[in-house]
Length: 167
Image (tube, rainbow, N blue to C red; front, side):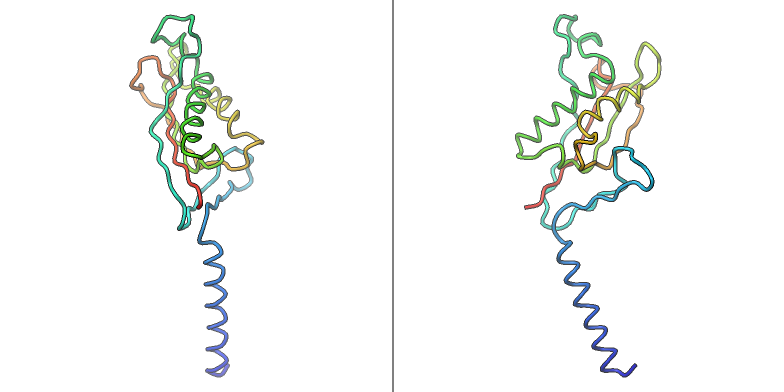
């Protein structure tokens, strides 16, 4: 290949890369898990021009007002507390003009259920699926951890999220 042809081909490639890059420059890009229908993604890329919002950890509100205050009976099991925490997050996001589909990263802290001495991951997933099941195509990247305890003695679940929204 002669030098002018090489330069022309290189310039064409550069223009193509720049054009593609600028088309991808805004927004949020989600990389699905390979060979899995588990309701999370492998990675999320947040491009320039996108606002990123960090929400503090959320606990569930009271699920049974007839139960004694500040007890596990008042707040419910892992499933109920996951649903409650995600409902609180949904409300905070709404105040910011965002929705659950804008969540890009989630961290779930799960304490052991006193009845079993183990974390109830299945219960957490039942609550999680209510918000990130088949009806919600925008899945977040997510981590879940068992912790020794949470700040509130009755708390079994605390969830923090990061959300992103393009202008």
